[in-house]
Image 1 (cartoon, helix red, strand yellow):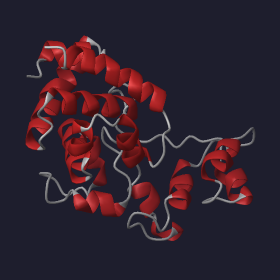
Image 2 (cartoon, rainbow, N blue to C red):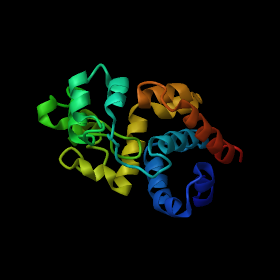
Image 3 (cartoon, rainbow, N blue to C red):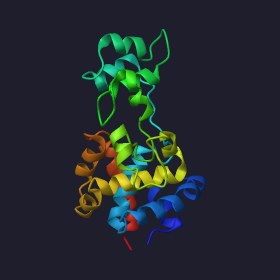
Length: 210
């Protein structure tokens, strides 16, 4: 059973973050079948990574010009990266960056629709894209399509992460103890895999040892 104490030990969070997130995560995990020690360990490890240790519930888009090309070179061209990426001439235009790199993806409209920024990553697992927001509409006690900022509120930030986890079959992958496949589903690749594994080993050492 997940408790306040073993949640903190499994995640390494401060007392303040423990008190903030434990009741909301415990409720959310219970609602979406994240109910075994192994499932809980995988969930907390992945969510911990995605939220920078439970400190962030909104995507940062403060990319440099060079980083935009390196990370999103197939979605943004050199002229756009220079115009909107952070460089010595100006700060990053995070709204335009999101509108460009997320245009026509995951249910978003084109650049001019503003959907990229409107439905940028939010919540503990960084739900991104209008279609992903809409998929949660029947599972959350909030209309996050009409008001996407609700996903930054503590309960919805946790609940959306647990719902997305279940919707994408991650309970079953956790049962198989497959951290790499879980990471690919969440990330689309294996970015941050070492940190995710480190967090998982810590969580399993606490939650799966009793």
